[in-house]
Structures are given as structure tokens and as C-alpha cells.
Length: 391
Image (cartoon, rainbow, N blue to C red; front, side):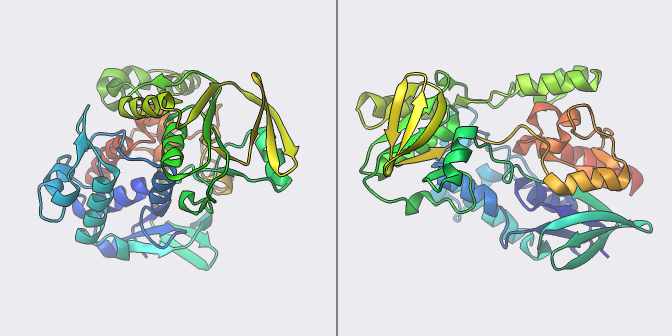
């Protein structure tokens, strides 16, 4: 029976498996990572590939290895130098470099053999241990770390859900079956969304597709290189946050994240193709939609717009991640939540004596950076303190 079972093998779960084996001194035999996908970072790689990401929004110091300069060191090595591209501000790596570095870390640290392919369905008490039910059997561990992503909580506007139900070509860029490179050529595509994913996708489509690509956004495109103010990474902002009541913490987190914004270089590239007529842009909201022969009619505040297909870049629902699994665990263990439904944890991100959380589940303790790479690095520091203090 392993001491630690990490549920979720994305960026957060992979980093924590590296931290536990590489810095906490936990034997690889005492750690397992449960994830539905066969390879580490499968969903993250699919999402970043489908939206056309070129550069990370995070600096190179935010990575899945233990040392903050690991990406820079890799970029200077024989293996990394062919991909050594960074962009200001904050020395941000290219997606190619970041992916190659992740592959390097996973291979060098032996993280892939720690994985078990499967989906957690329920977690229950089993004496002093925890029992995790999966589709293929039951696993036991002394402690569980929940690292669910938001990939199964996609946001579909009501009009889009109606069209999808009618069989119309409306897709979300983060759907598991969506592949940008498999889209048919020469069609009129409308991208709906106003953040960095929408703009990156529109840029990729106008480069690759012979048909017309247009972007519809409810608000003006807003430029910001950061997901949140860097003060939220450390005590400058977090000290006061931890003194705040939980209902107010939720409001603070929601207000502090720069949702629906675009980085400087992405905005510059979009303005260039917009001026060249290679892509269209309209600030308007879609109110309803229906089929119009073989096409789709979007009823917007600016009038009717027609398309052969619609691709949503509308992000994720604002709900607690983990779905039925976290619902079941709350009932099973009587876990405490704030009025917003998110976990109330201790400073070590423990939701229960033997259950830890990360990512969005940790927001009411970790603050606005919790979903990001730097957020799990912060959580990892607290986890190390816990292990060193309590074993």
C-alpha cells in the first residue's frame, strides 16, 4: 500500500510526484499517480496544442522540476538548446521548450512508472487508510492528494448547447475529441470568446485555414501579461487574505484573476492580421442561434452573423472541480466547505486528516495563483513542511 496516492496526473499531480520523490525523500514505491490518461500531461498538452499556444504566460521559473532555474539550465544543454526560445517579459519559454523540458524531467526523475491509468470514482475510509474505487478495481493509500483539473467542466452557453443537441458543428476548443488539425478546409469559422485562448485560436486558424475566420467577443480585447498580480504569490497579499473570512476570500480570488485578457505579444500578432484583413473581429454578444440550411445563424447584438462552424473558446464553468468525486467525498467524510462550495483547508492544504488538495480546490487557502504552476509550487512548500513536521 503506497503512502501517497495522487489523483490527477496533469501539471500539478506530476510536479507533486516529483517533489515527493525528489525532495521529500518518499520512496517511489510509496507514491502512485492515478489518472485516466496513459501519458503524463496528456490533457495539458492537448489543450495547449489545440488553442495554438506559442509562448507560455508564466515565466520559466514556474516549471515542474524542483529548481526554479531548471528550464534555463535545460535550454543551455545539448538536449534543450535546439528549443531555447524565451520572450519578455519575465523570460517566458516557448511552448516547444516547456514541453521538451517536461519530457526531460519526467524521464530523468522516473515519474512515468509511478502512474496508474484509471479514474477515481469514490474515496472511502478503510481502517486507518483510504480506499479509492476505480473502474478497474480498488486502490488503498495512507494519504490522498486531489489534483483535479477543469477539463470536464467546460462552459457551453445555452445557445451553443442547443445547437450541439441539434447536431450542428459547434465545438469547444477543449473538448477531448476536438483537433484543430483535423478541421475541414475552406469553411467560414466563427470563434466565440474574448480571452487569450480565443485570440490564440483565431490566429492559428487564420494561418492554417483557407476560409474566413472571425472572432466574436462580448467585451473589447484587454491586454495583460499576467493571470494575476504577482503579489499573490507571496506574503505581500496572502497574509491579509488569510485573515479574511471565507465568503470574502471567494470574492477576492474571483476579482484578482485577470480573466478574459490577452498577453502583449498575442495582442500584437492579432492586431497585425486584423489590419491585413486575414481575420475578422466584432465586439458583440451572441443571444441565440439556429440552423440556417447547412449553415449556422448567430443572433448577436450587432445583427445576424452566419458561419459554417462555431468553435467556443469560452473557458470553464465557475464551479468546484472534481465533479461527482468531490461531491461523494464531502458526503463520505463530512468535509468542510465555504458557502461557495470550495474546500476549507488548514495551512498545509489538508481538507481532512489524510486528504490534501491543490489547484482550484485550494483557492480559499492558496489564493488567486492556486490554479497556476506557481500555485502548486507554493502548495508543495507547505506539503514539505507537513511531511517534515508530521512524517
